[in-house]
Length: 401
Ligand code: ADP
Ligand code: ASP
Ligand code: MG
Image (cartoon, rainbow, N blue to C red):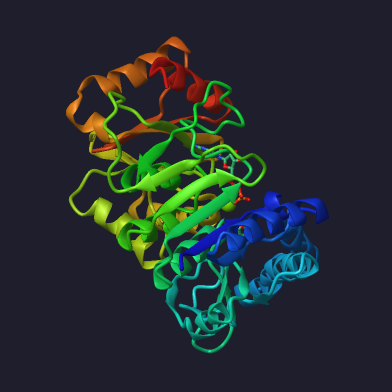
């Protein structure tokens, strides 16, 4: 008997009608003779609403209590979905993350799955029950509730597919699959039939929110047969796998990430060991630094700029102020109105024309590039937030995606 893991995101379960729609997808899969484990997210904007409720009470609430609150969203969806499936006359049971055996580390709000004890799920599947599991949540070794980071239900689903050796892991969402850019604001974006784990991992890490990046990392590691498709249409989705049919396409897709802040420390002494001072301080406080730019020394001083996510802004600025005061620098600049726009494609590593084509597209759209960063399969540029949509569309057009 085949085992299929199906994951349904917030929009797919947002109200009673959508829940019955999902119940139909699950029971049809079950009736074809498959075992089904379904992972659900919180309904619609529930997670955002819960965060807003917490802010009203205590904007500095502990991460532990935030996790206690946020896990309730998924518990609502899982029970409602199980009730719908019961009503349709199928054997079903819903399980919270801990009931389903999810154990994580203790990083509240961004926990990593350590292991999954699969006895309970195996037992339910042997009884031919449909199993509904709350995504996004686990417990740590002290039995405290944890969450896996925004969008983390994808990772719950892929992790389950890996430990249960599922034949297929389907991520159902509100778009037909993975597109060459976010179809919400690039009207000419095209759905891809397939994409490699590596390319998908870059796209997800660079801001394409359609899949949680850790879910892709895990799918690659355990060779999970992964597919993204719509819960609202019957269109074929996008398959994510190790190798795909060779296409002439050098660039696969365009992604953007607005969760970036640029911090600069200006006019510090141009001496050895300075970059080390800055970045070791940031690392010690677990601040992830992305793009780094250092100016060449002039009159014995230099500037260093780097980007961090918004949540790390305050901490990074205060660390830099301390260093600036200590070394007699000329001060700190912080720009929050920026956006990182990236292109991704395995084909670009052997093709020197890709970068210049990207920069040409931006030049023609009169968009200033503030910083650039490249790797074998991606190029990222920092632009003004106000130019972000225009930049994505200009680049998407230039590469004829
Ligand atoms: P879910 O609630 O199902 O997890 P998400 O909102 O997390 O759904 O992810 C789906 C959304 O991802 C789409 O509505 C789309 O706007 C966005 N998205 C961003 N980049 C892409 C892309 N390259 N392809 C498809 N969707 C994308
Ligand atoms: N409900 C969680 C969130 O909104 C997890 C998820 O949707 O995957 O981030
Ligand atoms: Mg999601």
